[in-house]
Length: 53
Image (cartoon, rainbow, N blue to C red; front, side, top):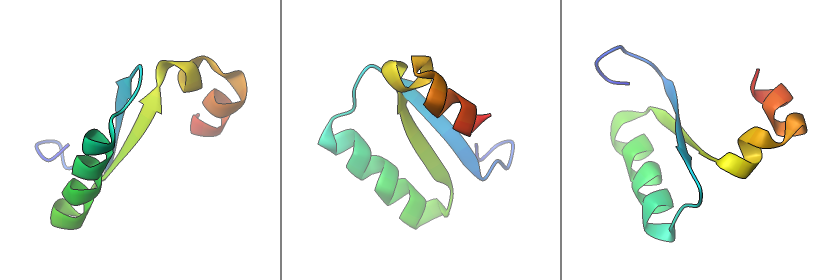
């Protein structure tokens, strides 16, 4: 994200620990860049996928 100067990125996983979510929040506070955590289940859910498109 930083190298290509993107303001928003997606982090895909099966689940996220509270530590991972805390680190994403800290990254936003430090760099002012957004990381959206997405689970595989959310990606496969058509309703959520349509909102991301």
